[in-house]
Amino acid sequence: MSALDDEILGLMRFAAERSIMPRWRNLADGEVEEKAKDDLVTIADRETEEFLTEALTRLQPDVAVVGEEAAHEDPSVMERLSDPCWIIDPIDGTSNFASGKGHFAIMIALADAGEAVAGWIYDPQRDRFLSARKDAGAFVNGDRITVNSTGETPPSLSAMRRFMSDRQREIFARDIDPVYRAASAPGCAAEEYPLVAIGDHDLAIYERTLPWDHAAGCLFLNEAGGTCLRLDGSPYRVDDGRKGMIAAASRHLFDDLAARLSASGYA
Image (cartoon, rainbow, N blue to C red; front, side):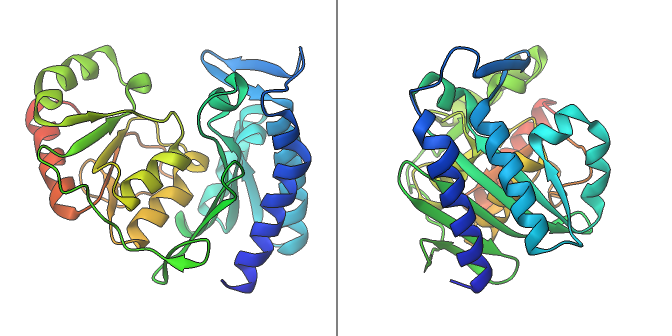
């Protein structure tokens, strides 16, 4: 791993040990809030983002920080996304964390001119560290990874339906579900991207594509040799505010699902 990878892993591990894992299945009354409908935040999210913001600013003082919780409090923070910036999701999968079930992770990306150029995902339950750098590959605990598909027919598809419109859900159920084997969505993009890369899932589809949820994971999958693109085949940018994205274990799998979605009128 690079010196920067080691530095980021150290920060993530410290934040998890200090603020996240002591509260796993141990959150007190008043330490979980609903900041929007079906969108939770915990004291661990806030503490972790505050620590990482300070630490990354010390690491590179000239690089802005865009954190999920900071952007919720002040939407103008999103204006930094077109400049060099760190992007922080202090706990991806907060609902899983708050419920005491399922997967969650810390996600950090480094972006420049709207494009993710490096990304890191740390799963504190497994002590698993994913890293990727543009044009330099994807790694799990320092070992390079190459994407695999399940090889099954039909391919498996994990669909994040929560943010689909009613019309999109109807189209999906009618035209897409019958063609694929349904895979259980983990409720955590930090878990879904490696599931596609490692070969447990062939495809995943997202409607909401906020930068802290997807910058690191999309880069990781692409660098592993998979395909993560917008529904129209254009690259994911952290600053464009668009919706809809497919993560696929191969370009062929991506093209087939994208064509079916287009023909169905989903987008």
